[in-house]
Image (cartoon, rainbow, N blue to C red; front, side, top):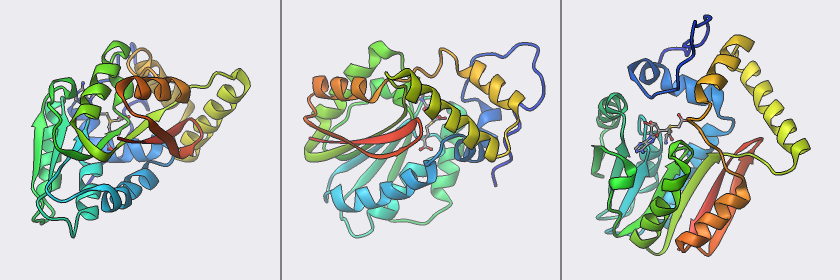
Length: 243
Ligand code: GEK
């Protein structure tokens, strides 16, 4: 059972850079649901995308898996596909330990390997579905193209990448409005002004968001020719890319 996120509810003498440590792991399901508008919609849709796009005897990857919400959704979508396995990767030891417990709490014949590693070190092969659900934004920008290139190379023809991210926008007026709407969403989820401002400070320089156009350009450079937004809520959204 996940605890309520109150990590930033008291004034902190110094707000450090955000890390995915044990304290975050304990509140993570509550934190992500109350911070990312559309998170549950995206997680549930991953089962449908998997059901349509996964092929038998292929690999499915959940890169930056945290507690494995996307892995569990893929597994639901794989029900009648034979010979598939899911590889879930995260470089936070605390996340991986808890993820293993979550995954194994549900019975299934579909094998899941949970690896503690940097997603930049993972060799992607024979893949029909790859999920980067709010993870690319945490990589330093210089590492993003080579990761996407590895994913493109490892996908089978017709395979898909689901890339969910927080976005920034070129137009200053729409940028500000969509940010304000996100803050309203967080207020509606019960976060105080102090929590919102301390969390924002902790993510400064840790989460570096791109525009949708920057994503499309990078995806094209990596080899993907078919890229479209399939979901957006305020400044959060998800792109599907087909090989
Ligand atoms: C979900 N996908 O619930 N290598 C491996 N893992 C990384 C790396 C890296 N280089 N950088 C960050 N992470 C999940 C949510 S959370 C998004 C993903 C969020 C991991 C990090 O440890 C964390 O678990 C995850 O990426 C990002 O659908 O908290 O906003």
